[in-house]
Image (cartoon, rainbow, N blue to C red):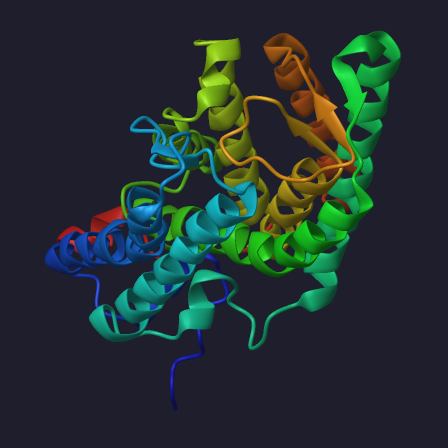
Length: 312
């Protein structure tokens, strides 16, 4: 009789090849697809900028984005690079580790679209309420910049590409890296904090950090840690995938920040980023999100193996 497929999210790594060198090579392969092959989508418009006679066109060396050109070009270029990240994760999971791609999302037989929709809807409501509260407390930082012609063109691109970008990050951080870190321990809190730190690192170059050199990194760490914790608690990544997508879609379409890494044609423009409010409101949203979708839900089955097993 065949052994049943493991039902724990962390147990999924046992489906394939778990040699340390596979993780080493797999991570290099993922980063190659993301930053090297993905950079092609940024290099092409860069070449166009250098060939352009517009003296205002330039390359921001800090962010790698273009200035003096249509923000839509930047948005498409950066988000398409995340498509290569998905390809890199897929090839690594499927062929380097030899296990189903679905296993980095859920131990179930198929993806739970309903659970993803719940995460999307609840987080969208919470982030909208948090934005409303901020507006009531400090209305002068919100400016209406709605331009129907530009907005609807941008909205089509945002709705198509932003979920790809956020899903790519979830596949890497809450999927591949979170499960890999489970080889070293099974404490959900520790794994969540480690994952939050890993998620924070690539965001340290964001221009938003000018609003809070300490609080904004802590904000990104909190986001990564919370999404990792609900993934472990729910025994799948559908909630995190949905919540992450709604968070970025709201920012891109409804209330973007003046100094955001990605400028979009939103309805409102936030001229001042309050790092304290961003961090505190996120923690409040996280608690409510957990109570609404996870309180009373049975604890997932713990992995049937311990990290010691890998050393024997």
